Length: 281
Length: 276
Image (tube, rainbow over all chains, first blue to last red; front, side, top):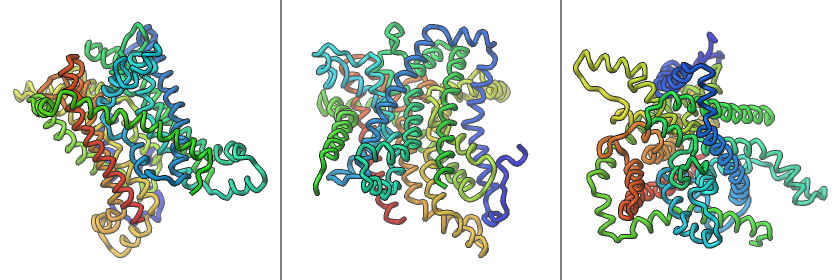
């Protein structure tokens, strides 16, 4: 650990500014990110394992975890399908309005989550533009898990598209041509040549979209209805509720579980990328 | 150009998805905001609550952009120009705010700077000693800190790919010829990354203007510590038809900003493509 974050290698000693840039980065990172998160950790570790288990398995909290995880996995899967198609269309085809389509993909990054939340909630409510259509068939979307998942699809889509797009752009078409010459069908080419190349990017996109959906607050709380009875409370909402009741012990306990899931996701994504970089070299 | 059947099918799916999932919600904010006419719209935007929220939103955004641009540049410089152990780990740490819930960010600041937090307890001691009344959480500094937290990686994320692709040869040559660090940065590195940097700043601005979850945990006083998204929330939650229309009116401001961001993005991307 002694040489962690210390410069190594002789050749690069020439460029100045390592101390300054590294020092500033570590200081600000610690002050703004690490120390506050460490405080959450410290507070949550004050609970005994027994109390912790009791808190986390409380039915309201357990249901919130089940809802958050299942809806964000589902939303990330939906995003993988559509994100793949969108990335494919944007990279491989030429059509009118391509630049516009490419720009619009990033709308969920640019639109504030609360704005997205109230709009989606209004659109999918029984009197809304989409909601009234589904309501005439007796399907309710707002205030159900379907609505929740739709909001998570909305916030997650750019992650998948932007993960796949650059890899698809770099993909060498000669392998596909070779496959085609050897008589492989379109489907075989896709399954045997294209898909394996894109799998790491797809997994990365899935992980990012999942993490985003899991932690999402602003865009889901309006459309979900936050009913404990109908299991439409998400974990972020429950944490906020505990904060409002000044129940910091529960809030930090739930946050700890969320942080662990987020770190595992982030770590897996990094491993996929490191593995991929090695494979390519 | 001839379009094959698969091509047409995939294009149709893409366009329908984008229209249903993204375009319709965008347009619906604007139509909802004008549901009660132009006069109501203007009135809704000029209430004291909205104006105060606008002011705080701008302050927090400017602070976040300044801090994160400087730190982002520093971190990208350290990571792309030097070899050291733990580079991957450091990148992961910088990315943390991307993947954790903004509500947890808010909670983290409460547990650090609030009554229960260890820095919060020091601040209380100092306040007693000096007779001051410094507050971090549930006050303006908390809102600013939370905004900086959630936008922390944006500038860094945009410039690091460009810096990594460009390598270090030019900087090393300049250093060998005796150029100072600042000269190298301003004359060689900055021109290479300027479009990516600008785009990072644009994204950081957009996210800072719209941050909701983290700020929501740290801000309780409408008209004093509320930002625009919190004001939208308060209006929408109050439930009356007028208030909901007003919520959409305030939202339309942020939608216009989002559209500007997307246009700038397309413009900056085209610029970056040309230079590289």
